[in-house]
Length: 423
Ligand code: TRP
Image (cartoon, rainbow, N blue to C red; front, side, top):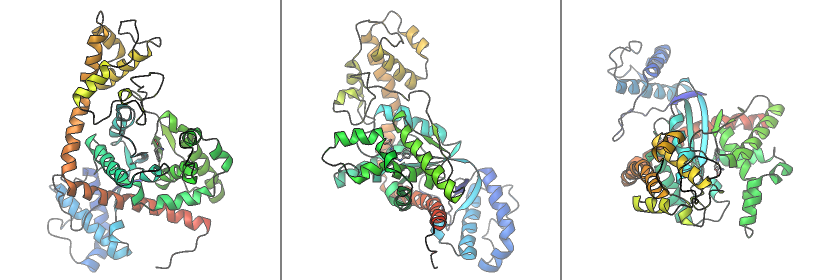
């Protein structure tokens, strides 16, 4: 897919952030500007001051590039008759990445080290869509105001954890109706037999026996819609979601076999370090935001004292030696957390704590975690105070997501034989 740059009309600086167009992007915009210049000047008059000569890029500031982009957008609106909210200037090619998290429960250190942290490192290489998948959340009964609050907190946390909202499309799933529309279509290309095999459905149905609703059952189809809507090439997921990615690929291949090359077939992207953080109370289990024992998980928003206390109470063993081996799963988990937070290797950690006991090691792990989480928490609280800034991100990125989603959706609707829209 083409990387995109959404310009604003007129282009303006957003509060606290300089809108930046990469250098090469600027050139492309200018080249495009030169191409449409003659049509442009006829339709909308001369280019604004400062970008009189769109082909000359030397000495042109980013702001001026943005103006050029804004101007091109305006041209697209006037010449092609498209909605200005959807007018996007396309720039350079990048692979597409899609992932999402549910806004239920509080994010844990496992979610951060296993997912969010990797997301941040992927955002240069890919055109990224990171969704707050609030539509998935209602497959389990939610308190409305709580759901809304958590969704906003999660979106804010994405940014606090380092995802640049100008580079990454951070948005609420429920703000892009294409997810629901494509999910319905894909439901008609998914077999009950396939859904019956989903282990997460079986687990959740057992856990919520009083509310085994159809949404819980077709949850993987909505997830397939999320991914296919953006023609994602890669999807970072944990092990527990691999089966859902597999069914996504099957649905996409089935659809493509009938209608031609419509969907990109997505590949899973398994994170490296830190992908496998275990419960502090039972290292046999994954650290989970739905664990009933609060001591089992470190929550991203836990204060430093709580973090240290939880590590001091972490279940270990009676070996009393800091060694990285299967026989000591509790200590192995703590070493992995320590390494993910400090960048050290297990061998270095073993050496560092050679001859020392758990009473030295456990608080050290706590401190390492605090040093990673504290700056994120501080940014989170700062960002939360700036309502207008977050609101603007929500609005802009929903527009961008919607643009791409609609592109795929219209293609699909046409292929399956829905009647054309009359404009
Ligand atoms: N089901 C995923 C989870 O609970 C969240 C999710 C929804 C997702 N849609 C997605 C993840 C698309 C990756 C891609 O973890």
